[in-house]
Amino acid sequence: QVQLVESGGGLVQAGGSLRLSCAASGRTFASYNMGWFRQAPGKERDLVAAINKSGGTIYYANFVKARFTISRDNAKNTVYLQMNSLKPEDTALYYCAAANSARVTVTASAPMYDYWGQGTQVTVSS
Image 1 (cartoon, rainbow, N blue to C red):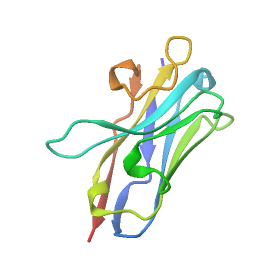
Image 2 (image 1 turned 120 degrees about the vertical axis):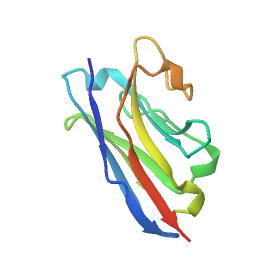
Image 3 (image 1 turned 60 degrees about the vertical axis):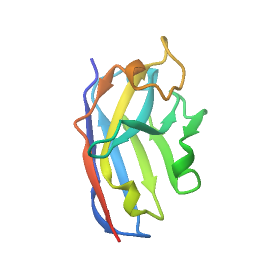
Image 4 (image 1 turned 90 degrees about the vertical axis):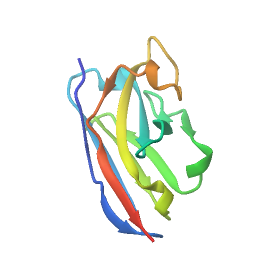
């Protein structure tokens, strides 16, 4: 069982930055591939970025490439999402999720993730 708690969301002006954190409970964090998803009202939940258990494989959605950076610290059981050059269209509820690396590689498919946090709101004003 893995419990995930996101933090770091908030209100920021366009062009600003935020750093999201996702703290995981349990001793098996290093065996999970991690993903950041986002969901805006009335829209589907989309993958933003994903990272494998060692941090050696990273995937970004096209809409965030060169602006966002995903990273993880397995010693701290934490995954991060550094978001720069934020745009109003980045406004959404951001979730982190964990997928068992023994079952699936880095993936953009939400159903393949086993555990989800409650989300942290990011609002970007124009």
